[in-house]
Length: 426
Image (cartoon, rainbow, N blue to C red; front, side, top):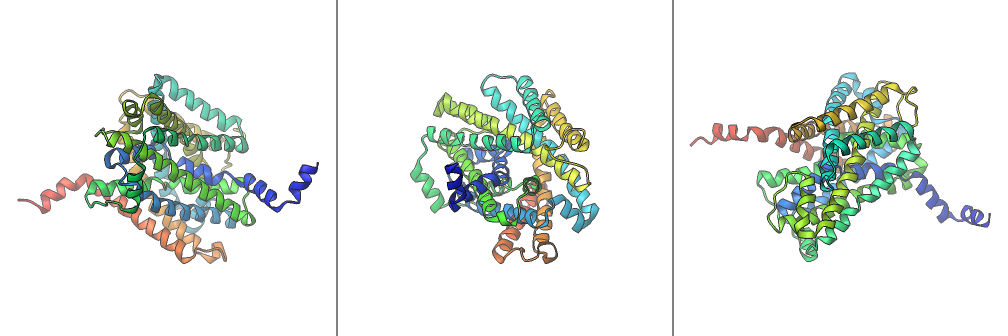
């Protein structure tokens, strides 16, 4: 009893308990950033350019914090999810356009996550015909038999497991002096491949579905304005974890693959390629991190999609609901998982094409989502006195412009040979 009384009388102890109660949405959302697609992007960046692209993590971190804070603030002030707000302020047509694109993209993204499960478990000699169905079953059981508190604790554990990439990078014996030099004196290039990788790293940290999931998680957890400073710490910690994991993935691949001229196409290739240079344990740790990230994201992605679609159309949603209480939510969740699993298990499925087009759709939709968000978070009718300040608007609009440039680059690059023939005929 004395311990309880001491806690009640200690402001510091009370603050810690409040923070622990609020902890979750920011860290989980930030950690899911490091999914199979993100890990692949960082691995390829390290393998191709060594430490030279580490500087991109600084603007990525700033943009991620600012955008996630907007979601946090909108959720707390309005008590509504992002899908709800977009429908109310922009109408059904724009909402339908965003959602149809997001559902298609998220099916492709979920398939990519299960490809990460298959590739990572292959390092340990486990067939995809065993690892993928078992992981899908575990994801379904977690969603249908658990509740939000249990799921969030598991998600937080998954987030912690991503720190295994720190071990993998340290075992690769990187050149810390060269890493410091890469931050202080970055070597920027203007060729299309380098520019595409820069934009890819910035773009992979901010996905459309993340904005919907973050705001929905804030509402489901019941976070209000009085909790703002603790919730903001949660957001900053999540964004920090995202960038820290990205940093060590790039470092691990730069110290081994780039140094030895090894070219890779996906994250599973990086795990296999690490073995001759950093040892079997480093390879296995990298693969385990990929498995955790892929399984983690294979849970969150379809959950987020089902949640914001049901939210927009007024259906019951949330893993605190039973299947008979939210049939549309669980039907959509299960359908996305089932289609993604079938794609992965289908012989000779074009996974690279699926991954590419899901990322293209994401890149096309993200500016629409961000423009909608920035408009609403600057509306005093919606936000009252909690509108954006100038710095937040500069970062928000700057990120949007960069991502529009990324979209244009992704769409135009396949036609580059045509333009070269048209304008530069000898």
